[in-house]
Length: 285
Image (cartoon, rainbow, N blue to C red):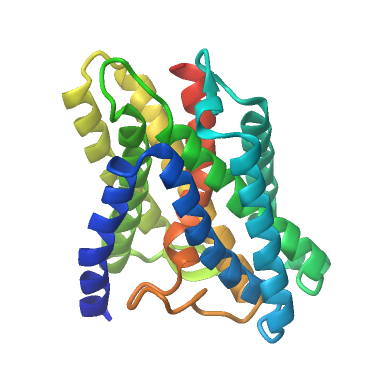
């Protein structure tokens, strides 16, 4: 399993970095549609693991919504005079509200599952609220321009990914070595409080990198935002684990050997990206 994970990462990471830094923003937005369609098909299994019609219906719904967003808000209209397009901003706020609701659902699981576990409409709505704000946040960050650097937006996308990767990696290794206190056993039995704390500590490496390359930043703010985004990313992971557990699914898919599905790889990002984008707008725009 570990060997498969490493091999997949070797070809996947350059592909992701190439898309972030080399693809023009308009091509990036359309390439994302394909990626999120795969994630949508995987979420369709959460809605109904036995019914292909339900899965494809949800996938088509997500595809129509994402294409509509790209057509209604072209790349050159995403940011105007340092203001995010109102449609994008509204979707991000809705996404942030959803993650507050998701936090409640996770903390009260399995009791919370009583009203949504057997309701395809609710699970479809939850899938839309999980995927669409993440899609919008990725495009919003990628398309930010700066006179100082043409790669300013892509660097922000990479920064969020580094926070999530650092938190995940630290949580994995510290949890394996020292994990004793179960974090939320009803949702994800393997995750521990020690692992979560280890992941938060590991994200300080990202803070050190930011302060090294951009020393004019306020250290306290960078630390606070990094820890907050890392915690939110953990919520994204726990939320997907909750929905998979309720649906009797171990991995969302098999497209990424050793890693599972696309949804398994972006679950933390689905929460971290919208929240980071709103924080960035509040403190740095």
